[in-house]
Amino acid sequence: MQRRSWAEPFKIKVVEHLRMTTRAERERAIVEAGYNTFLLRSDDVYIDLLTDSGTSAMSDRQWAGMMLGDEAYAGSANFYHLESAVREFYGYKHVIPTHQGRGAEHILSRSCIKPGDFVPGNMYFTTTRVHQELAGGQFVDVIIDQAHDPGSEFAFKGNVDLDKLARLIERVGARRIPYLALHATVNMAGGQPISMANAREVSALCRRHGIKVFLDATRAVENCYFIKTREPEYADRSLAEILRELCSYTDGCTMSGKKDCLVNIGGFLAVNDDDLADAARNMVVIYEGLHTYGGLAGRDMEAMAIGIHESVQYDHMHARIGQVQYLGEIIEREGVPIVRPIGGHGIFLNALEFLPNMPREQFPAQALAAALYVDSGVRAMERGAVSAGRDPETGKNSFPQLELVRLTIPRRVYTQAHMDVTAESVVALYQQRARIVGLRFTYEPKHLRFFQARFGPVEGDRVLRDQDPP
Ligand code: PM9
Image 1 (cartoon, rainbow, N blue to C red):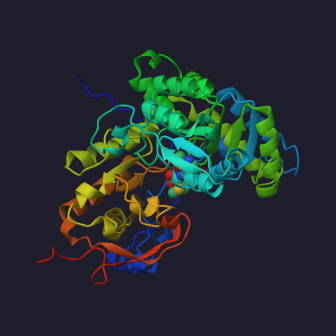
Image 2 (cartoon, rainbow, N blue to C red):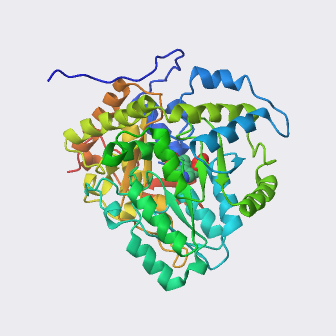
């Protein structure tokens, strides 16, 4: 059959120049950054795949919307646009803007969790868990086992394991579980989706026990694309219809608008319960700002409202997920180990298979991310032991089964050629993997250590040697 390619449903109007660097410059930059890609200057980065968070290219309509910013302190017109977009597409009753996702997580955790409570979720997320813990709760992982296996081909590796959840309810009692945090396209598992069938069953089980379900809707529309393409009864439904149904199984959501909603800053908390909304509005005014702006400018809320409309367009999502798959398929074709199936927002290199001889204590994913930057100026992110942090009870390093490097694709920013360059660097590095040197901490912050930690090589003074060791 003749090949029919798809292409992005947009054309480029403005370009942003990238600085090319030499390997010697990158070697200096990674030392200055303490071998932590979060501490690199963006000027020193060629292709920035650190995160898809706040890195989207906004559309001409969103930029036009910025000019409609109503910067009134209270009751901005843009708040009402945002509120009506959230109500229309997500279906929740109350909408409280926050400066970004963790602002919403903070308010939700503080409003609902009491010391000694348990908060089940389908795998931890860094900022979500820290807010649960700071509120006195204990996170309990109830994701299915396949999520921890990078090679499992299961189509919905984000699913909640209903038996694990039922056992937790039996063990601690429903009264000590304020809510279940249901993540759509589970970030730490490799951008793996939940199925609609699972969301429905989780909701039914929780409702039977009086436990609320809050969706982490950060990448919920991407999840809906997987439901549409993998769950046959949804093949003919629009992304917007699927999103409304998914949200209907939950009591509200936290949202980092910096992902699906295609903005550079912003988030919100949305809930159905009137009393909870009241409590959250009372708290948002302390930590974020008045409940009609929550730390955002009017123009930011307008851009987010427009971004929500754009995010549910099938052509947009098809190109977005298609670009991630394009990169993954080239890397995989060359035998580089990645998390399967290819997920929603990035390609996740399996550092344990990439560097099988490097001890976990030398943080293989952190070393691999640093070496990739030295090789080509591509910036990726560690998602393994450094991100997992220390066990709050024992103080020991947690070593999750997944030790990954995430090549995260910003939305509407890079071209297919950028994907080719990235893939070539990953493949070249794989062929020279014996040259990568492990890392040790030289500075370790207390909370969310992956953001600000500094490292040094366990031997010598480079993370990527010029030659294979003897
Ligand atoms: N995610 C990401 O790069 C940015 C910061 S953490 C490295 O993946 C989920 C599923 C997220 C997320 C952020 C947040 C927090 C909540 N849930 O960054 O505070 O992926 O807007 O959102 C990041 P904010």
